[in-house]
Structure formats: C-alpha cells, structure tokens
Amino acid sequence: MDLRRARPDGDLVFGGRRMLERRRKGPITREAWREARMRPLCSRGDTSHSGNRHFRLSHDTSTCRLAVYGRPVLLKLAAMRGKAGLLLRQLAALAKAKATSVTFRVDAKKLHVTFDPADLPAHPERRTPVHAVAGRALKIDLNPDWIGLSVVEVPSDSDASDLQQTQLLDHRLIRLAVPVEAGPEQVREILAAAASRATALARAWGCGLIVQGKGLGRMRSGGGNRRLNRLLNYWVRTVFGQTLVRRTGLAGLAHREVWGAYSTTIGNVNFPAPDACAAAAEIARRGIAASRGIKDVLPFCRQEAIADLWKDRFL
Image (tube, rainbow, N blue to C red):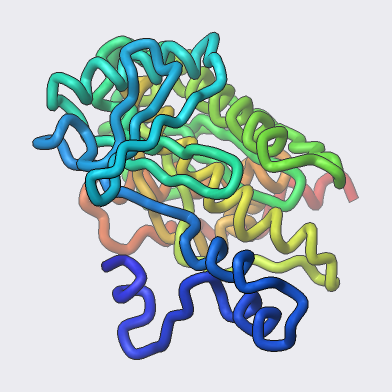
C-alpha cells in the first residue's frame, strides 16, 4: 500500500530496476535475482495479533519466530545488552500482552524492529514533564557542519511579533564534525548526542517548547560535494529531526514547526550571537508567536534596530 501511494501511476519492479538490468545483461545469476526480489521482507505491526501477524520475539529476545504460509522459521538473534536489550525485552512483553504493535523488516543481513517508544512505560530516556516557563522556547537551526541552539523568552504581556521584546537567554553552537569515512551508526550517535544536548538545555531553562524551521525545500551546498549535500538533506534534516521528535516526547516537551525563511538575516539584526544561533533565536520567537495564535510570524522590526546592526560595530 505504501509503495502504491508513493507511485500511484507508475510501475514498480521488485528487486529494483538496476538489478533487473544486471540480470538482463548477465552479470548476476538467476538465483541472485530471485533473492533480490524476495528481500527485504516487511511485516507491519498489528496490536490484535500480539504485535505482529508473522513475527514473534521471545521473552529474552534471543530468537524471533517467523511464520509465512504456515512454515515456521526460527531466527537466532545476537545478544542485546544495554539500552537496546532493555527496550527489546520491554517490547516483547508488551507485544505478547497485545499492548503495542511492532513492525519487522528482514534484509540479507539484519532484522530491523520498529516500534513507538511512547508505548514503553520504562523507557530509559523518559523524563518527568518539565515545569515550563510561559513565553520561553528553544530553537534548533540546522547547518552543514554546525547546529545552533538558542533559548529565547517573550514575556506574556509583550508582543511576540516585536523583535525588541524578545530576549536571548542562552545559546550553544554544536559542531557535528562527522568524519568522511563515518558509517550510518556513527552518524546516528553524533546526531543523537546533539539532540540530547538540545533537550537537556531546554529542560534546564524551563522551555516547554522546542521549535524547528520548515519550508526551506532541499538544502544544497554551493559546490558539487555529494557527501555534504547528503549530510544536509538526509542526516541533518531527516534523521536528526526524527530523533529530536522522539526525544522531546520522552522528555515531556512539546515540538512545533514554523516557517523558517529569512531567519538568518532577521536574527542577525537583533541577536548578538553566531549566525546559526541568531537564526535559531528568530525561529524560536516565531514558535512563541505561532503558539499565541499570531498567523503572520514575520516580525515587526523597528527602524532603530535596522540602523544599528550589532555586527557592524566590529567592522
């Protein structure tokens, strides 16, 4: 169903068109082509069938039983310790009790398990709800090699559309420093650490809201660096965004997206911080304005602020 939604009027080749062309020209065997057509095998979760219709995790997560067309297959899993093992054991118990759904995906080497972390009552990243300060928010600005964090406050009795009423309380500049040879797991760990720092900063300042910018389309570097473009569009924007949404939910924080255009230009007018942090401060102000029902999130900028750009003082 998902594939049909992605290509409602197009053709689909199981195994991929590239592999089909390789089979047609002869570089791969018939058996290799059949194997490519069969994998990956994906089964959606179903709460009413103990989490999944075809897959069953054992209570100690050492095995996973797969039943297709009445033929059981036993998959032996690696011993999972630490946080991963704790989560899987909780998941196996909840699935058996029909309290959650689990999606499984099998490829040539791994068994992938997808679930909703909010269903796990003893998740190690879960925190008590923060005592939020009214009019305070944290914003994250995504860049190729840097992530800017800013905590801003607009008092309840002030106009959230006025830049002069917005106070920058704190800011952080995180360098990603992703090695060129880094694999997917290492990149995920770096982004997870950045998301953890963002949630910790928000809780420390009593921010009940974390804001992200949207509406910028595809981000590309000025050159033809494919690695940098991939970092911009997939890792930083997609993976980091998904990690942040998950962590904010577990940390008792709200998450909101607002229009992010012109944030760097406007932020540099008013906030004495690095570019990424200044842009983050402006997006945080827009998040506060949107939460107060203001439809036009672009700010009102007084003439004296434009005439006295703070960064011009150092030129």
